[in-house]
Length: 394
Image (tube, rainbow, N blue to C red; front, side, top):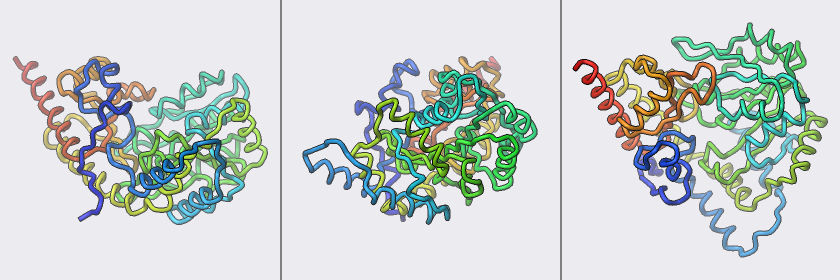
């Protein structure tokens, strides 16, 4: 029996939680089961809460430094979990991954330069490129019966016309954990073309079904790869807005740092610092239990869909707590599909079209909630499909 109660339903409505309190604006009703935005409905590790309470007990919340203990906690975590030795001098503390992507694009490319992304992918990748005046180059993933893979042939040609490549590893929303062969092939292309890779690895800890994540930087030469890391997804502390960049090349690090200074933005929040350090130092048992729980939920959901809704295909995943649902058999356009799940099933999912090319007809489902809540949503989805079938036959 796990010491962690992931079945507990915590009240999040009326707390300012985007996942719950934005339902009316997003879905037109405030009673849908919210399985959309990628945060978890689980209490974070108790050590994190205790660290925040202890820091709050000191009544001064002024300007803050990043203590050596924070760097040490990050280094120890990645060495133990991934056998990756991160030098302290390579670490940059940042106010979130999305701002970091913008900073890297601005620092390492010029307006009009090509930046490659692999849709369907986390949608801020697109806006980070277009809003900075760069040229968006899409290298769509290839769908197979066993999940998605990279189109390396196409990528090799596209890389000749780009300066930066943004990798999602593990991939959101399709759940791929890239294997070492794919990563080495990607690095070979980068070496041949001078492409710099920004690897978003904030889902690296969320591994399912005995999969193994390899940090791309472990395989790369200095200057090839910049890595975005964070405790935010792992320990459900995304609202605290602290992430890190691992930048081994001093010139690149200086350029990115100058970009943040130009914005006059600091990540030095005393609460995010103590929460992140506590999570990395004391959250491992919680994470291991979480992964077991999410994997069991995934298995039950897949079995339910196979039995009750076999026409909706669930993409095989190796990582994240997100499912990528192929709903094209329902033969609806994206607006109708979203409306169907909301109005007929009372379930709020993320539309696949949000993730760009290859997302039409798909939906993303967040599994990181108490299992009875997830299974309730599945039951409502199945009943909605049965009602649709009845209407079509009438």
